[in-house]
Image (tube, rainbow, N blue to C red):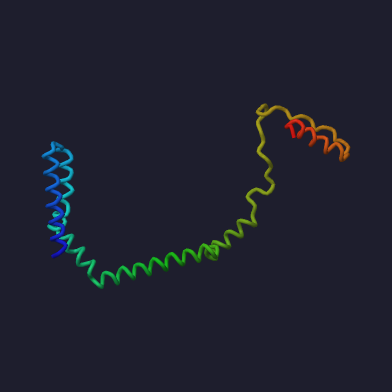
Length: 147
């Protein structure tokens, strides 16, 4: 009963605001406000408000919400445990088998078509592994960058 009264008051207030808006020659806005203000009274007339009020104050409905919450918690916790443990036994076996079997163990790098890349330079002759030569390259790079 109270919900219907509140909805009727909201609709009456909205229609009053729509009338003031129309008086100010803003007819499009007034029509939009009137449309919004008619929604609560329409919900009262169809019985939706009574159903919602009955549901909101029903202990059975709140017990049902509690049961749905417990069900959701069970689903969420089982999913979390399943993810943490790595899935089901069948999934773990399949993962191990896939790990053991290589898709193409002897596969090489993809071949390139002739002419798609310039010819590679021949490998330079191996230099003597003198430690001074190794540091001279580094020193040249540092001098180049002004360090």
